[in-house]
Length: 494
Image (cartoon, rainbow, N blue to C red; front, side, top):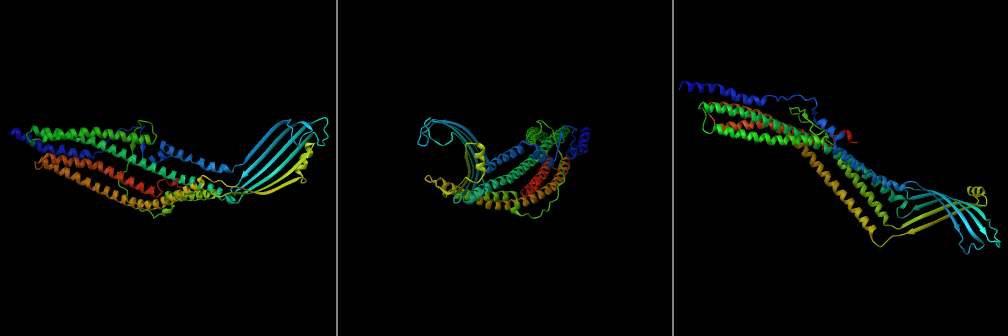
């Protein structure tokens, strides 16, 4: 009996120390060997890596670089066109204008340059030299020389008067292409900003997964100690029925938790490594400030200056311009045509050229040309399509403006909420620790059962992870608030 009581007294003395080790173990910083090859990551470095070298950011940039072609294709309609041709012709054809010669040998060389303008004007320059050598019949009485050279220099101007009146449609097409491309540049920055947000979320997800896994390991180790402690208590005959089985069952739960959290942690780190375009298997270390930063105070912003709305405004302007161009295309094509030529003709090519460069043999032409395409109704349908596109863009602009106002308000509320939650969990963690310590003492003294102590210990262990997650949620909310204000990556704002 004396020996039994001495064992019980020994348990009463040692048990508080054993259970105290369970609590203090949770407060001990986790020691990990330093690996110089590991990548140190912060929120800032994650954002920089995503913008500068990740596959997804490259894909976004490549996608919008492709849109440059559409604008270039519109402007290609106003390129200079330089053309040249040279041809040799031998003719023995009999006709009403040549009955006294057996054949004509003609060499023709032509060079022309044309340039459409966005004023609906087509300008053209041309130069043609034609050399002809004829063989006359022996009975021919023709006074036309057998060998002649003709030079013609011409200037032409064609001006649209009705359809595309003075370049109305041309300028609208150019404006639509410019606005569409400019809107794409704004959207590109927004996509990159969203990509940075995804990277920050992935960063905190991996960090929380690491902390959860580490806490699962710590919890398993604590329960291994607890099992040993209860086993000793049982051997002293100082435990209640079922206590040892309860802690053993809880230990099995901890083993299961380690397995599942290990999988989650490795998966989250792999996702982060892939997103940052790091070599597979790269070890990452998270540089996290465990302190909760205070709530920032940011000035009010003008919603109309945000990238999302600027892009939609430009889309509306592009749709308006496309509608103007389409409306103009439904009209008849009426053009003013003016032509001026200088000519020269002589047996000697030098004399022919001199005549052409002079002013003695001009040719003038002024007239109108009219054409109208009708029948299928496709032009009116195209105009209707452009009108619907414009109305759609206006609707999207109006809706998006309201959504951004709501988003700004929600972002502020989310920052305030996550800050308050993080502060509350920090206080809650202190209470959880205090409760676990007090219940530990009560259990040692036989004033509570093992299930109550297990619940308290689990709640305290979980609060460690919840605090890390709360810090991550608050940081993500801050970055989302900055993103909706176009301040997450301000260096790309312009």
